[in-house]
Amino acid sequence: MSEKTQPVVKMVNIHKWFGNLYALRGVDLEINRGEVIGLVGDNGAGKSTLMKILAGYHKPDKGEIYVEGKKVEFNSPHEAREMGIEMMYQDLSLINTMNIVRNFFLGREITGRFGFLKFNKMKEEVKKAIEDIGLKIPNLELRADELSGGQRQGLAFARSYYFKKKVLILDEPTNNLSVKETNKVLSFIRSLKELNISVIFVTHNLFHVHEAADRIVVISRGRKIGDFPKSQISVTELASLITHGS
Ligand SMILES: Nc1ncnc2c1ncn2[C@@H]1O[C@H](COP(=O)(O)OP(=O)(O)OP(=O)(O)O)[C@@H](O)[C@H]1O
Image (cartoon, rainbow, N blue to C red; front, side, top):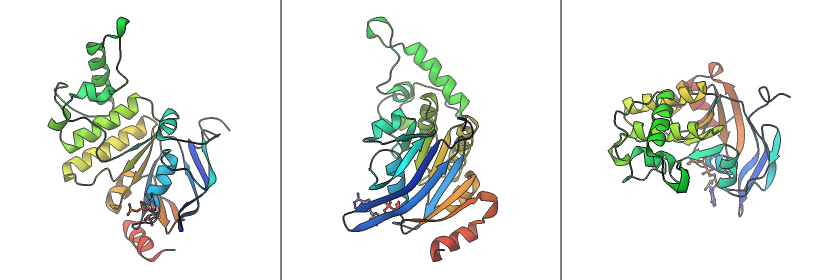
C-alpha cells in the first residue's frame, strides 16, 4: 500500500489491565492522514488509556500499533513523539514567564556557530508557523501568561505543525474556554487538517466534536461500540449511544 492510502496509525486489538481492572478489551482504531477523529464515551470508558498507549505513556498488555504500516513499540512518550505522535494536555506545557518565541522552541532552539541563539531567525519561523495555522498574535514578545486560552492553544498547535507532527491527540481542548475561544480552537483543528496533520479530539462535548470531526468513535467500558462518519450520526444519537451503550 502506498504511504498516501494506508492509515497513518493503526491500533489493533489493544488490551490493557490495571491490576484487576480490565480497562481496554480489544480495541481497534485506524487514523488516516489529515483526518479529524472524535473520541467519545462515558467517564471511565477507556478513552484516555487508549490515547496514552498511542502516545507512549502506557504499554498495552496485548495488541499492536502500526505507524505508516510499520509496527512500533513505544517505551516512552519521547519515542512516540519521535514518530510524530504527540498528546497535548490542557496546560499545554507553556512556560508562563517566557515569551512566545522562547516557548515555541523550548529545548529545540535554532542556534548558530558557537551555540548562540538565532533570535531573529526563530522569530521569523514562529511568525510564519502561526500565520499558517491562522493564529493572530500582534506581538511575539508577549509572555505566555499574557495570551488568551485560545491563543495558547493556537501556539501549541502551531508548534506541533512546525515540528512536523503526524498525529496530534487533544484531550478536552475546549474545556474552560469561552465560546469565541472555542470557535478559534475548532478552526485551528481545521487548519491542522488542511496541513495534513491527523487530529484525535477526546471530549465530553458532543457538539464540539460533531462540528470538528470527520469521524466519531465511541468507547464504552473498554470496547469500541461505534465508528461513524460524522454525516451518519447526529448529536442526539451519539448521546443516546453513550448513555445506553450498543
Ligand atoms: N493509571 C491507572 N491506574 C489504575 N486504573 C486506571 C489508571 N488509568 C485509568 N484507570 C482506570 O481505567 C478505566 C478507564 O479510564 P480512562 O481514564 O481511560 O477513561 P476515560 O474514558 O478517559 O474517562 P474520562 O472521560 O472520565 O476521563 C477507569 O476505570 C480508570 O479508573
